[in-house]
Length: 357
Image 1 (spheres, one colour):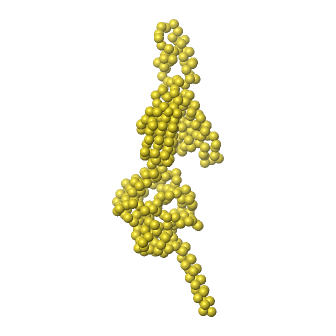
Image 2: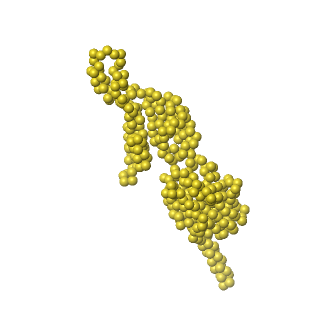
Image 3: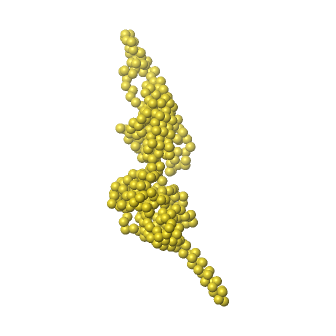
């Protein structure tokens, strides 16, 4: 009977230990929350500053912040441990139910805050974010948690700069944010290589001259729609809208211009001039007189091809059709073409405003 009681006690202890590995505590908000700037606050899906306690292993600290698969997480953490394990290596997180445990942050090389860390990654699951720990330890952790939609990632750099400007007296956040920006240029910037045939063509990004081909731009902000134009005298102009990603490259085979105005209008206009100058003595060709008498100006076209609409199934040919139309207008009729592929409403309206200007 005594052995049986000891056995029951042993089983009860196992069950108790098993239960403690799944304890969840309510979030403990820090009193010193960051102030979100009005200009970019709408690009932050969620933000909180928490105090988390590494006292018990398996004691998961809830956040009451639910995220979607594909959201970007930015985590700044600071704290102290009494164990030999680093504070940064001790912090874990889970997302949703039955989620694997992730290392929440990486070591941040910062002389002033050796116990400061950051993490930036995409969520591969949906649910509530919870923080936990690898080893039991006494101490404290302060965590700034930012959730950013994937579509708003292109605003992250400006959002962080605005946060720094408005929270300049928060020494910990200021140091972490500036170090994160400095040490993670790959998140915000990429390279752009532009070559053309013939070479020595002028390259314009958003109407700003950047140099002649072949051209290498070491730092261009990623994920932000830009307009590129490549121009060379007596050759058709190439213009396009693109979103810089990792090491964007452009190679353009420029076409030599045959006429300075659309061929469909040249015959009738020359015929009219020939009848008008009949019997007059001059040394001008009809083509020269057409150019002198008529100012044709520049031809502009905005071509839009979208394969994706919220209210329609995915289209298959819109982008290809738009590219073909843009090529004809550009190469055969010397149009300055602004081609938008799968553009947002903002990009389209911005391009229309430029045409009106």
